[in-house]
Image (cartoon, rainbow, N blue to C red; front, side, top):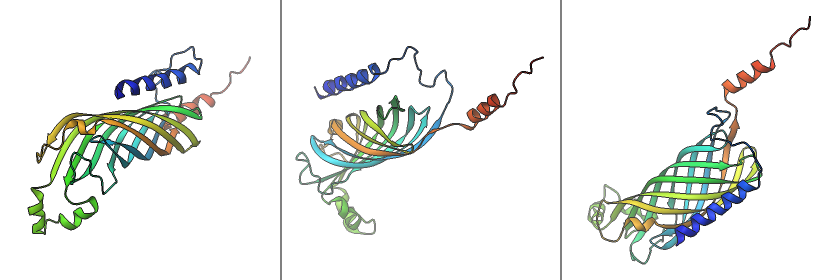
Length: 242
């Protein structure tokens, strides 16, 4: 039900944005396969969403390369930041997660003050269950300490491949920065338990989340070859009348 509602909302927003601009010509991703601009940006963001049906906060960052001010590819990583996060299903253990992804993103009408982007993340989540909080791990999980070897058997680490779809509303603040606010839906694809405990499954990552952040970088830099061709076209001499 959540997936269906999320997809319907995403489609309606995209349809509304498209209908507000009357265009007779069809624009392709790279406009006849020509590279008109290139960019690079960093996007720190904050998310609030579900793990094991329990809401928690995440912090992360994406590093992206942007083509034609529309299509971006790069990577992202983020983690839950609450050291006291302990869902009911694993209580009294504490849960920490680290997510690394390959990220694709397409921006609709990027020149508009307010526009939309559609990100897709495909990656791996490492989830740890531990009787120690995140800020206690370094103190209690030292390889030089025999306590680590005694404690290791009781801790659980699992890896879950996942995919995440989203839609963001973006605002151009300056030529080098954008603010964004949006929603994501994440679902697990494959579960690999390193230390099996029966407490984790691939569905633990399923759920909605909201996200907000800022993009900072160069979004619309003309490649050197384009500038060179433009200069040549402007420097052509006018024909001399006889």
